[in-house]
Image 1 (cartoon, helix red, strand yellow):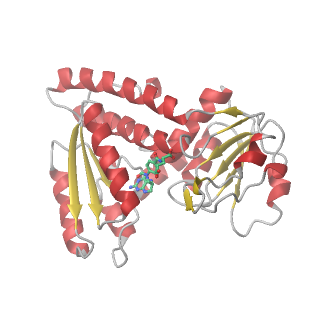
Image 2: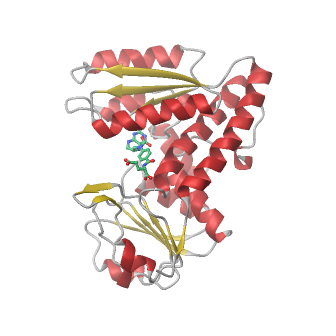
Length: 291
Ligand SMILES: Nc1nc2c(c(=O)[nH]1)N[C@@H](CN(C=O)c1ccc(C(=O)N[C@@H](CCC(=O)O)C(=O)O)cc1)CN2
């Protein structure tokens, strides 16, 4: 392996510590802690673990955690009613509905019901529009975490060629918007892309978010590329990313491992977004770039 390993766990610890410092200052100014409400519907094992981790991290950062666990057969109207209550609750600065929702529930309708100014997941169409047009809003946590890792690794991103593999609303599209805003030349590749190796051969930055174990092969990469692997695939061999790690690490300049790369940044960025939401709701100044 020649690539430098990008340590997302360490970067996430640093971000969480900074958020905790600023949350303590917020509590002094506002007379209350920032509050995050997380809604879990059903008993998906991985989601349950993520929600527990979010609750713990929220409390550790000096914030208030409100956890709502609902049965898998919850009616759409009841879930919407809960979102409405959280929208109206002054102690709640951020609302997150854990995905995926059980079959039969309309995730888009639920996400669109969240007050855009409490939408710390950044999934509401208003926040997607704000990101696309360069306005202040909330950016989805995983792509924001990827951007932070890229900036820490490369410094200035302007003028670099970036290929984002995957076009989901949660990762691919916002990732491409963030890289475009950072003045990269961005290609979005997906399942219909012809000749992916051709595009990757010119990519200084590769963000893989396709959800297919070991999909990206090392021989497709430009030597020295920085590779961000968003994939979390559970295989008989354990947890693996979307990038074939061994072959990629012998060509790339730097690469995120799975686990321990992008994943931990997701929760750290959620805390960051909650802190920003709390400041905006209370009208207390905070430069989001300084976190
Ligand atoms: N409402 C949301 N739902 C989901 C999101 C999201 O951002 N908002 N993202 C994912 C799940 N997720 C957080 O919710 C998440 C995924 C992975 C990790 C993480 O730290 N992963 C570890 C590995 C942990 C493991 O063994 O599973 C790592 O990569 O090192 C944190 C959060 C889907 N749903």
